[in-house]
Length: 164
Image 1 (tube, one colour):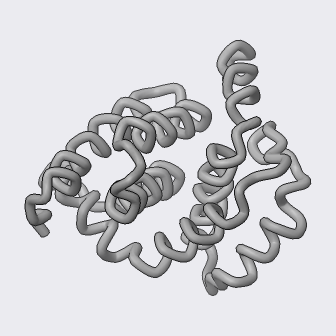
Image 2: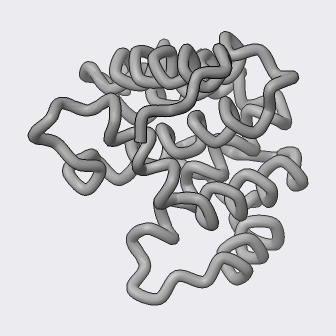
């Protein structure tokens, strides 16, 4: 990643809630890649140990542990429903399994917050996850996150039933 993008991302991680979302994406990626996922173990490890490490070159520091734990637990528990929502915005010949695992974790988190936090403006949620995608990817993935979350938010936030 170019140095200017990395330094811009580094300063944004001073925000406790943004850092919690970034950590949640990392934790969900780990769970998704594990042969025997254990949510409680991953949550504990992140809170006790991983927060002190550099994650993808960034030190999380003091992140909002409540947001982190809530987000990971909800997303992991509801991942099948979240995947259905994500699948609905994909091209017809694509499935969630075809998506990069980090991109999948980002989309799951964004959709979960759009669905469960109506008091949080959709623009804030979309911007948070586009920024996280921008940290991990240099291609079109941040645009995919933006377009995907905007499309899903139009359905979730406008009160229409989601076309599952």
